[in-house]
Amino acid sequence: MDYHLYILYSQSSDRYYVGYTSDVLSRLEQHNTSLRSTYTSKHRPWELKKAIVLGNDRGFAMRVERAVKRMKRRKFLETIISDVDNIDTVAQLVRVPLHRGCFSIRKVAFAL
Image (cartoon, rainbow, N blue to C red):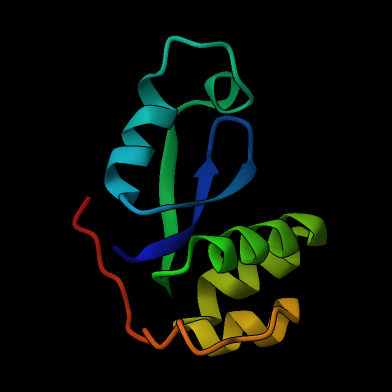
C-alpha cells in the first residue's frame, strides 16, 4: 500500500491543509463530510491541489508530512503544488532522507 502526501485548499477561507494517507479520495471526502468539529470542518469545502506518492513506508510518510507542516509558508506549499511531481524533490525540499523502502516516483492523477 502506497502512502501519499496531499495538499488541500479551502477557497472559502483561503487556507491550505497538508496530510498523508493511503487513500487520497476517501480522505478528501472525510475532510469534507465529517461530523466532528475539527480544523478542516471549519474551513470547508476542501479541494485537492496535489497528491504525491511517498512509497509504502508509513513512518517516512509521517516524517515528510511533519516536515512540510513545519514549513508553514504559503509560498512553499504553492511551490510544491506547481513544481513538485516526485518523492525525490519533496525529500530535498524538506530534507527528509530517502531510504531503501521508498522507490515509487510517479505522478498521481485523480479525477475530481
